Image (cartoon, rainbow, N blue to C red; front, side, top):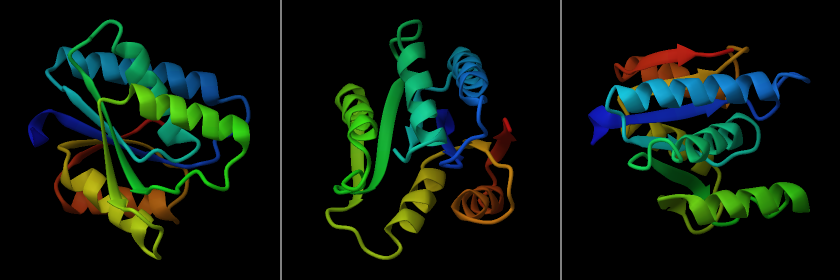
Length: 155
């Protein structure tokens, strides 16, 4: 399954005016990968890039009904402090996901880090949106490269 699995990692905040471009690029990548035999697309469910990646996979499922959106979430309360609008979108994505995995029932220091490692460990390819060499995205990309994954940065 790892050979046909792609994970996503990226920043929570995207440059103003770039969301549509990033979403279009993600849809293109998912389509190309589905044509190449990728079946599973794993995202961490965070705001920003993760959400756009999930939307792209769900949109492309209309053309490729055999692909799966897998959410690998850090904890059950991930969206507890989000705005109502963001929580509604998150809940809708969760309802449409093919599978949801939680690192932990409750939040603990390090659950995001563990989620990121599991994203990589389940995949053979990582698509990222990375514009900084600091933070969780940079750590995840470095870990992916160390684990031998091909990394495609669409930033």
